[in-house]
Length: 120
Image 1: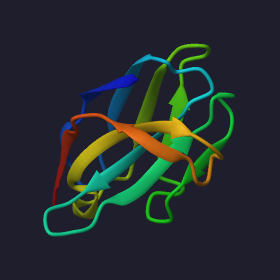
Image 2: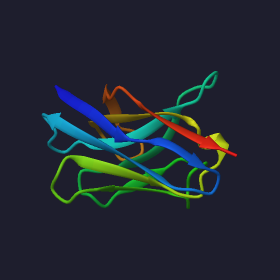
Image 3: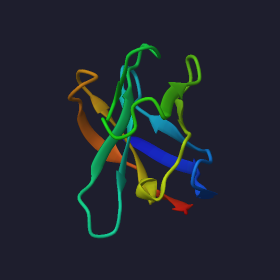
């Protein structure tokens, strides 16, 4: 079992930056961790993922070049640094974790979500 707890989020204006973090506890060896988001009335969208090697990453097309995912070395804490924010980034951001390849892990575990709101 893996428990995920998100921190951060909040509000920003267009063009601004925010950071969210996620701490994993439990059976985390070799786990891939990632972020998804869901806006009201929209489907859940993949944002970014990072492998257990702390190096491999994968990003959704809508955030490439603006968001960066990174992990504290040898710790089960990941961060999502979000820059050049737009109102389209407004959503609940969920941390997820699972095992498998960086591009298609089996996300078995989910956090409770944290709200990110971007105003124009």
